[in-house]
Length: 160
Image 1 (spheres, helix red, strand yellow):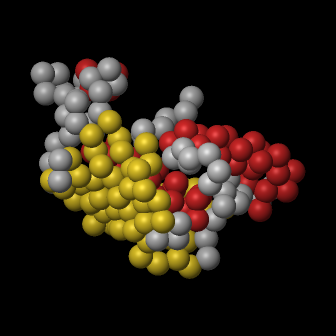
Image 2 (cartoon, rainbow, N blue to C red):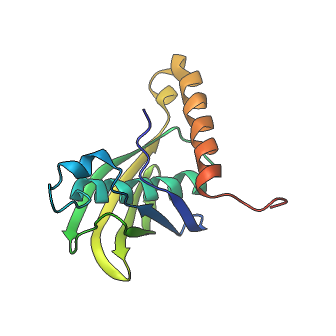
């Protein structure tokens, strides 16, 4: 099961920044319990949406040469507002520093121009085959799946 929280990438500057959107719908099952009578996007999913946004920036910046992009550390996470059904969480991330496979990014999520969440995220990229050469095909399978999903999230006009 794929757990994609990004609905659309709206802007991308490889190696620099990205903007994306997460639309919150009452149809999302977890909202029935979080919280009854006052449904809001859980904070952990706001952070995950920022992580996924950063991961797309990293993949696109490195021409999808890494199959795995993971959160290593979340620093200075601040929750400033609720995100309710019918709202769109507008996500942005900017590269602060890149050292080999380790990236530090400043990320945030806004609703209607008002900040809902922000953090400094440390992310790491790798290939499974780096540790287990016999799993090289798994890297290729994952990378191809991410390329296909990226084409849906950030479609390019024909001829570009």
